[in-house]
Image (cartoon, rainbow, N blue to C red; front, side, top):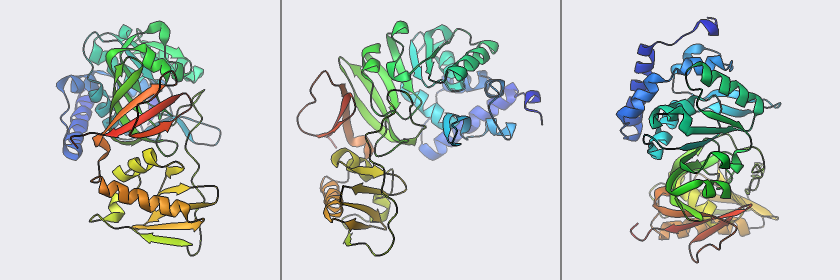
Length: 370
């Protein structure tokens, strides 16, 4: 079928919205608002994706709960995508968008998410979206205008800088894995405004999704669940996380069995609650297909509930000790931590766990009622 001849109907979008809502309810036990369903029904997803001439092998994929690639780099790796619709919806619900609110989106991509935001706030003119790829920004602006969302301001620029000329904003949504929270976002959100941001923890793209509230010179809130996004490009592209060591072959130099929970293998899988604790509490830790720690003289991973170390045994000992500490704390879930992000202008509080990033810090403390 010729992509240009494919056109979704109102009925198709209605069925799509119902399927996404049903899937989220079934798999996540989360109810989707009627306003969100109406937005899914109104925004012509197929016209935005195909109008931007993005590569879609099968046009019918547009109305599945799948990630669609928008752009690839010269190595063939995705640098821009249309996110999985169920994740798009869950993130927008976390934003709690209301009519008349001003919104900044970082990572325009196809423009589909910006169009949904416009429906939810009631006016495309309230939406600003920033895209680092200037060619993609021009294309997205044209496509949005052609389907009735010409009021959306599409800015070609580095999303790390935000869009100060259009602020301040009631809501900020980042649709890329950010290496931290930009001080520009902190400055451009109103007091009490909501930001939803995937922030990398432990490696490129591995990003717990944070719902944060703007408070003076900080953003404060909680992580919600792990996600994977394309990493931000531009000035913020440097990652604070070490590259994971290459897979070791042969017998490890150190082995330390882990105990203390019913299923150690389940508790120590990548993107788990323990993985988050490891990242915030131990330098040199990382998350990929396994979790581990590396140093200049050794490295260690957890495999089937056992710490395996090569070289200096210090990383293996740290990894095992970190697991014991997590168990002693009661195996706190990802959502049980209060998180504060601040810029280099202010000092972080005492206590808790601290991560220093390029020009900001992240402070995590276990809630007293957990």
